[in-house]
Image (tube, rainbow, N blue to C red; front, side):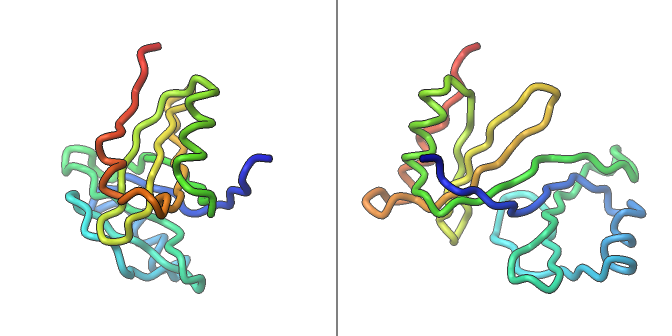
Length: 141
């Protein structure tokens, strides 16, 4: 049986002067909250739920006010190794990253049309999260 995945967040690339930022804060009432120390600028926006709804990545100034979807994320409680094994069996390309401080495993799966789906899973207890960093997989098509 496949694991149950639930919606987690949408990642958007947004310029600092984008009207979208006013939409999120002034109209939708989302507020900036905790964000792990990723090596790139951004903000996580929260509503009433404990999880961030929007992950904003600071777009380069040259991008202007445009907003681009980075990825759509889903979360599972199933350990990462089981999900990775199914991706391998399905012959799908993916990249793996680990969330700084949290240790969650992020599996980025590109799909036709340019969209990327992020699958967030816990690291297997028997494997340190850092071990996933060397497991970047992008098979030749």
